[in-house]
Length: 290
Image 1 (cartoon, rainbow, N blue to C red):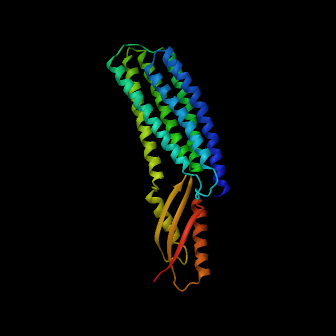
Image 2: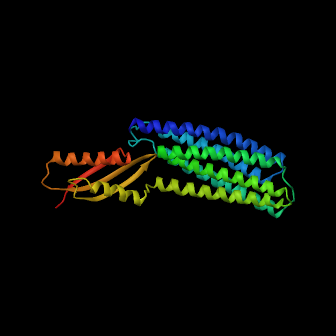
Image 3: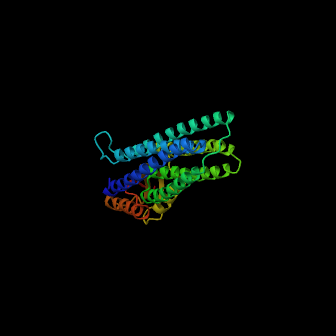
């Protein structure tokens, strides 16, 4: 595996440390604020960020394990550890979302009108701004590195930023005689957490079962078919191992070509995919076009 792939994972690991530090500070501030300022929504949001801290640790472990070199019983390397870590993240997010939702429903039906302290607004607003910055950084880096785990983390970052802003808005409206909104907001946050966990679960299982976007497959096929001496593409398949794309393709060529000429065409295919899509792992099978 190219050294560049390992360097990309290292960069993703450094971004994960940023998430861990941010989540830990924000979760502590929200949980303390929710307790002392009597805000169910802020407490629910703090629980969400606490789960995010644990998720970020899982992701770091997955990234660190994924860049272990290939060995005798992992000939393709350990890149799928990143997808496994993402799947584990989704389970924890779903669990926390279910807990928050059920607790919010229970509190809603045993309603006690308590107006959150105005300081709740400041805690939630600052937290939202911090998480928005972390989201923008992680999203940009995830696209650069094509990291599934980092992209999943960025989605969670955005959810956290939005829920923090919603919590701030709820705390603000509660000051004008609408304290019941705090409980409603806690329920909404729980549902948002569940939606985030479900989306990450779908994405991770899609990759672990070797799912791959059809539109990308078609794009690869068009590029290969346009290469001189390639008559057509009989078969093409692709899968991901972490941020790395592996392609298996069967091409049809002139049956009168020599072995050397056929080999030269396979190298053209490899160069085209590497130059156009930065794909380094390509298995090209040549067959005569009879």
